[in-house]
Length: 325
Image (cartoon, rainbow, N blue to C red; front, side, top):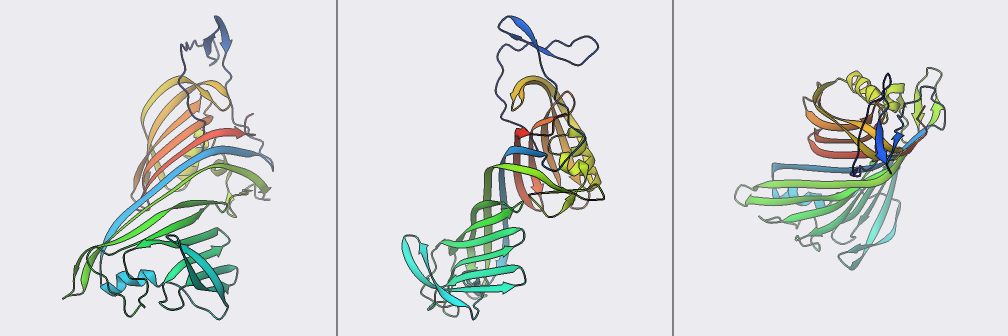
């Protein structure tokens, strides 16, 4: 995970120094050496990497459904004995809902339900990994009807606003839309087209908060333990490859160029490496472009492709870190 926005460099001249891989660029008429960043090896509690993360996830699909199967997506709440009242804003209207809270161990489920129709306007589920929420955003179905009365026709749609936890602290947000594009009332079968688009744009800071006796690492973003290569994969190209291969990925190198660019750590000579990543378990292939320095220190990474049947586009740009030697 890595790098900072790359800014075009004007009049850059790279000159290799004899015996060492140090590069120079022309600065106000004088030759100035470019620093070369190296990843530190003595990791400690408090070491961190901070980066700008830009992620978009798109998923589309279709299925054959009945009218009831389609409309049931309006009635997904889980009523319980613990009930209060909550006002939900729906398209500028204030909807007074019954508000239920259900606890199951460390997990909590809440739902806001219209007491007359049973329509669910809001549903949330909170676990140790964060909160997933669903809010009714729009529909052309009659919200005054009960589940038993509700009928769908060709052209019916339901749109939910979603928020899904990402690395425990952050949320990916967007819309999930269901549309009944075809429907035959004689057979009660129709075609439901589902489309979802979620995005996250935020500054992420991952920090080591614990080193286990076995030499594994726990960070602030997950309760899972990581190997050294797992943690360093955000700043070390070598560690990224080792971590990916340990998880059953096959890395193929498909193209490489070099440049001199501005990074979060200053102006650097970089390699821009394109790779293909094949997952032996899911049989999916994605493409990634890494921008890293002369000793493999990553400043930026962009990865796009299908991951678990979802089209993902992820860009990570380094902002700051304590992981330089």
